[in-house]
Amino acid sequence: MLDASDSALVVAALTGATAIVASSLASWLTSRGNAHAARIQVEATTAAQRRGGIRQSRRAVYLATIEQAHTVADGLRGVDGLSTGESDAALAAHRERHQQLRRAVTSVDLEGPAAVRVAASNLLIMSGTLSTALAAVVENPCRENRREFQRTLRAFIRLIGPFVQAAAAVLDET
Image 1 (tube, rainbow, N blue to C red):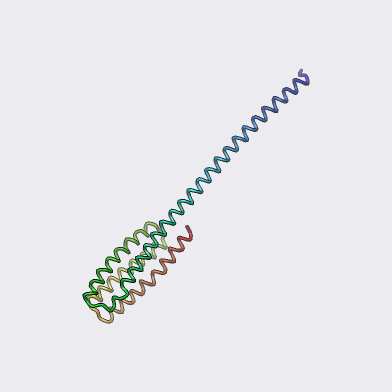
Image 2: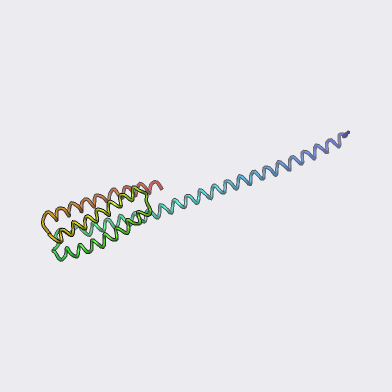
């Protein structure tokens, strides 16, 4: 049988062992919790950086496309009153600006999303239509061809707004 001092020793040993186990368990749980919290923080930071990079890349591509669309429009504003030789030069210059717009729209196709790609494609299609209308003016500068060219130019200019709105909406989301 155990006497009182032996019982106290057993109780003290059990209490000490329990304290050590509880401390170790608490430490282990704390380190797991800290590791989990650190992992969540790293994932959140990485996701935020990725979103920031995507937003920055999209913004640059969208701005380049907007600038090129304005360049196309600005380059054609005074075409209506040009001589035949000047119209030939204007057509060649427009075709070069159209190719630059095509490259910008290709970048938009890579960046997405669909709403912006569609709006950019509409700009490119209308720019091609402008080439056709301008070629008709160069070939035959009659009043009807000039009117059609002006209508097409106004339609192209109106398409810049929807592209800007779609791009802004996407940038607001990211």
